[in-house]
Length: 330
Image 1: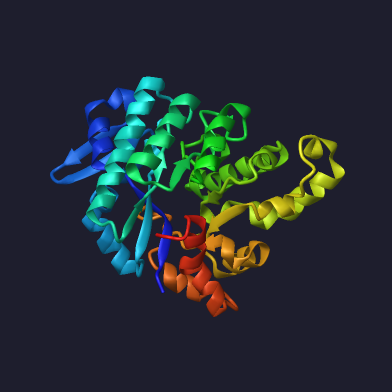
Image 2: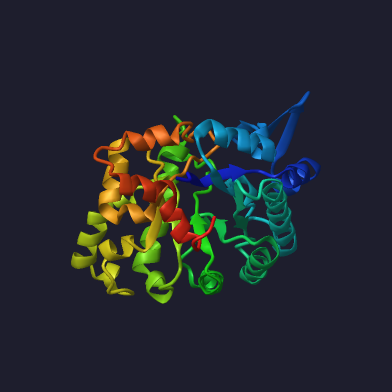
């Protein structure tokens, strides 16, 4: 039985070097101290350990965690949605080509997931088509919002529609931008902010009618789907008692919940059990969020702790769900 991790991040050497060379453009400082490097952007600071950019180190981490195949995606720090079109397209290409080179080193163990210059939809469509044709990617990662605009906004519809046509999976991942105010303490920008960002995105996709317009689009949600699977009853109730929630769609939020796919990264076995009960194990898969500090260093042990997990559910989450989502071969 293969173990497939659909949520594993990298920051390729190509974009690290670009950020080091152009700190003002990327609003980022790459600090160096001997062989060690550190990413600094505002309050976001973390060590650029080799697993971020070195394929050998990624494989070593996978072996340690019992993972056979990882679908590696860009760290959200590489989205850089503030860039103007030419720089944004160049940056996406740097990231995507860097990921492709890591995959080429271990084609049996790594699969690639791209990024797009999403604030510029025409350029985003062009890069989407390129990474499918030239890099063989079956998925792209987007933030849950784009420079303050919802992914459900009509201006992003051409990108989502082209992804649907190409059968490319959208992996929606929050971009932790270090919000101020009440979340600016105790790491709440991540602990609450990230799942909240996913929840807001999903609600907009549901209530705007975007999901109705894109019936074949596959969307994978990080971090167990944010708060959505655990508050979907509130969405359902609201759709029945509030006219504004049903103005653009007649679809049930409970039914639309099963339009999404989810990683199992909830950090609690009973939460994973609830997720499976709500959407079915065929829509849930392993996700480690490696190598960030909110990742799971023992994903198989976490899965084994899920109450009442059947052999069939375990097989779905370990590999069958991912195989189905990504077209039958990984």
